[in-house]
Amino acid sequence: MSDQFYEIKRRKTRPVMVGKVQVGGDAPISIQSMTNTLTYEVDETLDQIKRLEDAGCEIIRVTVENQKSLKAVSKLKAKMRTPLVADIHFAYQIALDAIDEGADKIRINPGNIGGMDRLAQVVEKCKKYNVAMRVGVNSGSLEKDLLEKYGHPTPEAIVESAMRHIKFIESLGYHNMIISVKSSHVPTMIRSYRLLAEQCDYPFHVGVTEAGTKTQGITKSGAGIGAVLADGIGDTIRVSLTSDPVEEVKVATHLLRSMGFRKEGVEIVACPTCGRCHVDLEAMVDAVETATLTMKTNMRVAIMGCVVNGLGEGAEADVGLCAEKGHG
Image (cartoon, rainbow, N blue to C red):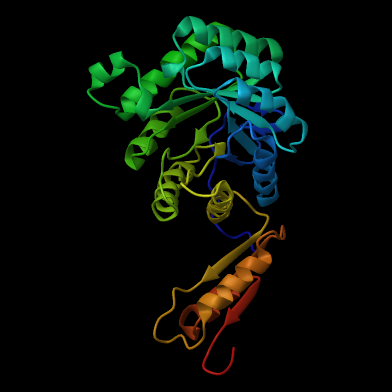
């Protein structure tokens, strides 16, 4: 594929290791997802993890909410190719125990972990065992004093919460953090990441939280994550969909390719069709996409329904397919 296209310059961040995967620094933007199985149902969870890995997911998160889920962590970890992130809410002791079970990263929301003393215990254990931590601040779980100060979850409130906890964690001598400031409201999410990027150099996990069904979720994630990535902000992403998590990975992969952050794989350019199209272009595009989904070759394929833009798009592609009446 030609290299003449404009490339977005990424924000420089400090590198953080999640298992063997580097996030931030000069590492490529990684793709994350989260299983939606019952974590303690190990076989079912491993099956989903394998499908996620095969689809190109590079970091996988699982819910660890009770002792049954906790006991599954080491079993899952033993059979995974990707790093395992333990998602913890409310139960700081489970966060501590998940480190013993082999989690590569602990995901906590400082606003619901039970206070700074409990947060400090988690931080100290992460530091001792060199385990990464995602400090995830969501608009839906801000501290009461910030809600009173700002009236509702504004970007300023979200960022103040994040910086409050970042500074506290730094005071404990720990810097192995990845930060997220998510919201289900896309403009709030965009503004939050932009504000936080001015105040720290930690790598960011970027996403629109609770984005919804495939149609709304893809649209909101494309708008929100895309806007943040266009600013050069973001080191790892998750597209949140109320769907099979493998779909999240597919959408995230296409999103990174469309933004120029992924060179490997096939990018398909296809026209939306109009009255000039005299072939079943949708079927053609679906067939090509299915056939090339797992290809790693850096290739741009243009599939066009008429000569109006077909010849021009074909000239910019590695392979150009342009249809006309009775011939191509």
